[in-house]
Image (tube, rainbow, N blue to C red; front, side, top):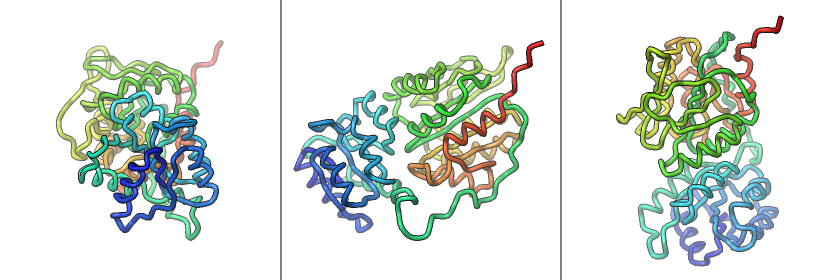
Length: 345
């Protein structure tokens, strides 16, 4: 479904999408209200949504559209997505799976079409619960490693497409204090990182700051990878501290999960717990392998709750995951490895 108040934009986007035989336009709508009404009559896999529209607007309507869409993914295509970091990050936090800046009139060129179709292909079908037919292969059927029970010393979380919403669900279910440092690598442009860190801190109920070289790791402080550097840790005389690196990663991502997971494994060993959330591609597999090789453990998001089951699936298929769970249950598994405070005498 294409949802945009511009007749021209609806026509151009429809032509682009239907140029790929994989896709079919089921419906178009000129407002969020019309889209919600139409979704009561038809089923779709992806809703392409503009944020700047009359009426309730696209941003405020995202939760209602997601509810009406019954498992469909929401893809934001809006001019706001280019420089409106607040609205873009808010849209992702509300459950939008991905965003793409909409070019100005007359600039819908081949590159934009190529990127749009690539993102739509990555999003795939609506959640399996909303589709008839045999269920998709469950991630829990893969080879799982034994989960240690010893208390953890550090928590490192990585995510990409759909990750902001997944992070919100995870931190909402996580105890307000877990007593260990938290590192987060989320694939986002550098422009959005300040807004992302501020919103993450609010939902996580603890400080969240963009990591800088030399920062000391503090319990219950979230260090967020900047958009233009990998977040790693190194040993120091006063304990582990942040080291930002800029080298090319195997996955090609910047920032990448691989350096983060590998470095926390090297320093914290069995006390390192990594979490790989929703996202396309294989970023995190190499780092997870190094972390597990050092005695640490990995949790990954399950297919049904992912916007894109790429990175968690790659970790599972590599035999590196201890469990495949939705974000709220990942939080419970993390909480099960928190060191209990000593009892009062």
